[in-house]
Amino acid sequence: MLRVTVGLALLRTAALGALALLLWNPAVSRVKPAEAAPLVLLDASLSMTGTGGQWRAALDTARALARGGVIWRFGARVTAFDTLPPMDGASRLGPALAAAAARGGPIVIVTDGAISDRADLPPDVVRRARVVVLARAPVFDAFVAAVDGPRRVSPGDTVRLAVSYGAAGPRAGHAARQVRLVVALGARALAARTVALPDSGLAATELAVPASLLPVGWSALTVRLEGAPDAEPRDDARTFVLDVTPQPSVLLLASPPDWETRFLARTLADVARVPLQALVALETRGARWRDAATLALVPPADVDRAVAAAQLVIEAGDPAAFARVGPRGAVLLWPLGRLEGDWYVQPPTASPLAGALAGIAWDSLPPATGLAELTPDTAATTVVLTARLARRGPPRPVVVLSERGATRHAMIAAGGLYRWAFRGGVSAEAYRALIAALTDWLLSGAGEGGSPARFAPLAYEVANGLPLPWRWTGVGPARAIALDLVGPRGARRDTLAFDAAGRAELWLPPGPYRYRATDGRERGLVAVDTGSDEWRPADAVLAAQPGAPAARRLSVGMRDRGWLFVVVIAALAAEWAWRRRQGLA
Image 1 (cartoon, rainbow, N blue to C red):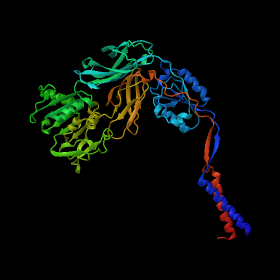
Image 2: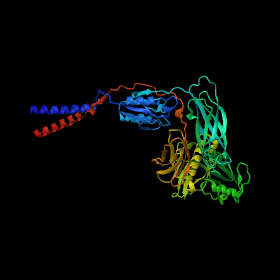
Image 3: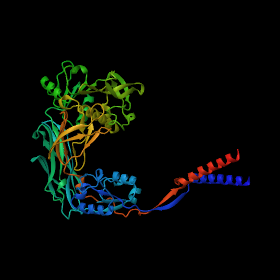
Image 4: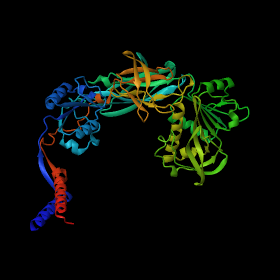
């Protein structure tokens, strides 16, 4: 009997002791041996082949350090290793470093040190990576940084281009050099200006080009530096794409004209950046339309032509004045408010404009002064904004959207919203955001032949080595679209594969590309610049370092040792079997 009691006690003690160790979970350190070969991250951005770059040396270094292991290229994206020259227009290390850390093992980075996302890199992963920096030789470079201007103009307009240019690198004791900024269409120069290069950094100027010098339709203008004494000529020019339309894209009809339409016209010209024509009428019955700028009478035939040609017609004021207006494109209705009072606009509901209106402090906006009676058909319209009288009572629709056949319609039922713009600050930005979002949604529905556009470019021109971004604007879920493109290397066919967020990317070599959907509904012009920020000399922000030692000391907890669980289960099972055999309770 005594032997049985001691045996049972030993089994119970072993089980309880193993359980106590598992609960305490003390850590035991051990040394992990080095892996056979590291993962090498090779900088494949355009800066590696810029003037003074050391791509060949970086390629040989990566091969030697990999020791037959794995090499990944990083830049604007992460790709498998190949010996082709770098083609990426950005130096983003973050995605490659995160993927390498998740894979495990030693990491080696071979780069010129000019990393654009250095501040976003995780410090612990960077510390344990070995970094080999092959810095570019210092050179002087003059460049065109950016070009901005109106995207759509009429033949009688003047295209005013805001041009940023600058210089970087050592200047070898020379004073400010005079260079020429030239705007050209192909080989034909349209405008020029002599400017002085700054010692370093950026400067800005404006170049004016009469739109009458451009053909009707889409054109790709080139803004280039001439006479710049630099060592890197590939960033001396930038492309700007614009469309010359014979009729205004947006027609504003105001009857009667008031502060609402005045602020609307000013904001439209600022945020929409499309040709805008404004006509006003002082009477509502048998309205005689006048040019808003000159107050000259406009013949009814000219009004009818402008209405028929406009992609967006805005009818602001008394609806009786627009009885004879029959727009073919998108329509924005802004009737006079009839229910007077302090109507406070509420945060937006789920709608196509919700993303553009996010972040607005709605509680800080002045109330609307009136609200038109509006009973939208919920089956055919989408309510974007609502308002409550004195912040109480049921919400009433303020902004609604609808699609009627092939055209898009919107209505703003509130009056006095111009006070948002008049107050300035947060209120003015909210007004701009609302008008810009409405105009963008309405204009994005205008495609070829009056059919709604299903997609549109997010940017009409991108730098060398970056993808052209596109967005889905059609009704329903995004689907793949086949494109026919005509570029500097001839015709090609490609496919826009939209993701769940309605975004797609297209990687193309430098040059202008005229695109058209294979079914012929959408067409336009996009461009990939020869210039890139990667060509400019830049300081190395990632320093060389040996990284963490190959052999590392790791801490292993007791719960990571599976045999302890086996001891607990075996001891308790043996005790139970022993007790059953002896007939113990």
